[in-house]
Image (cartoon, rainbow, N blue to C red; front, side, top):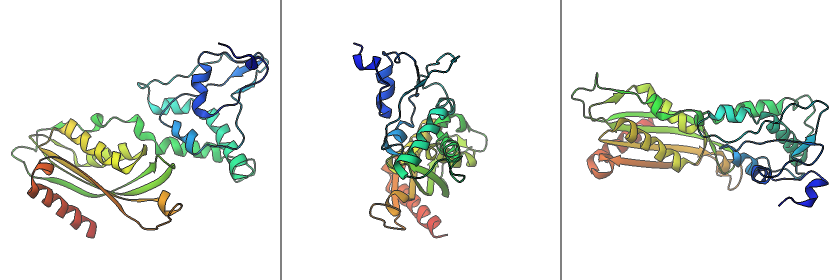
Length: 275
């Protein structure tokens, strides 16, 4: 049912309310609807872009307005496309964050281009949504003949964003698998880490995602992943314990069922960490 007050004034909104509220309701007369796509960066609206003064979802209609295009979430479209379609709205949100929440002047020289730079950086930091692990984990038999021992890589550095505070965490990944007739290029293990790191993440999930991708695409006898990370959300705020290392592990196949294989992997992790 149409609400009477929509005839009289533009509605104020919170970011998550927007799309659902306006899917069935047209904008008030004389106003142009602004559409925000739903995408995996919704949490930014909840966490980072919490502003003290709500932003109106409607703007004054220009004299010759272009047709309003409705941007909808499509999981088959690359995240880069979906995010770029929201950059205009995002610019306004970042400006309001700087002005109303931080209390700075977004028009002063040092901050004038900050919204644009921030959104471009955010697009890069979350570029992993636009990549599929299956596309890089192309396996081949040539070179794998008769090899059934462990393949290990350590000290793979990465940077990611904590999904709870949109704050960086970073560290090293240690990956191993035992092939079952097929191997993958060595550089692909580092690329796999980057795909899952360039997202809004928590360390526990990221560890499991890397191991699951190895098992699904390589179909090895077993796979193992260890991440050792520092989280700025607990170093620069909160408990402020600088230098704390958080370690997570996921073991699959023979790494979980065979004590000797697990012990060999953990020994390689320990030795790589000392170098």
